[in-house]
Image (cartoon, rainbow, N blue to C red; front, top):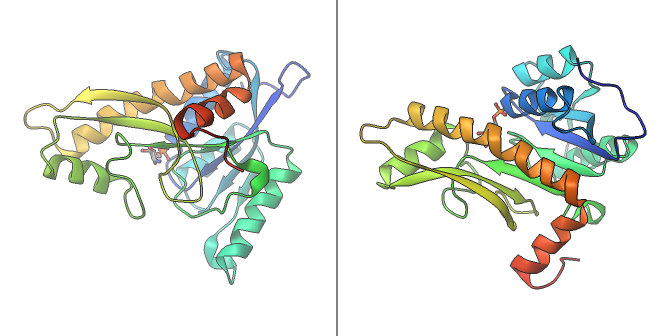
Length: 219
Ligand code: GRF
């Protein structure tokens, strides 16, 4: 069962989703079995209403907010609606997990938003590079390896300092489907591992990563 909020849980996260919610389900499980003992999901934001990720969040009793781009006249209004939910939920860290829309990250959340991507960034990222398209492009290019990346998100698609990656060797006869499955398995390890490290080291660890990779903290 998903544990209630208590004073021993200093880190409040929001999870942004658009689809199946496999990564969300995995985080819920790791929080419930206390491997992520110091983390609680304070809000789930979905850019689509009728997706499995929403049912997963509801079944865990989490507050779910459906915020669809088409309900807003402008990108900026859509972004503001997401920011408002996150601010109201007093979130410390935002986890993008299959979120397919563009959320303009406000200054308050710079270096406090993570994304997971099913390739070894900077390769095979950017607008339109999601799901099967990523794995097809990797195979078409004849790559020998692929994997997944957790990075600190900035205001460009799939861009920002890499926190960590997991790699796999591409098998002979590998298909986009088999690659998608194998990369998804790595994602299930990598995202919780990164969160466990944040749990131990605190959010300032993300600032250190930015300093190491970029030379100076971003404003
Ligand atoms: C994952 O492949 C992730 O890397 C990408 O979107 C997919 C999300 O899947 N950003 P799910 O919704 O967690 O099942």
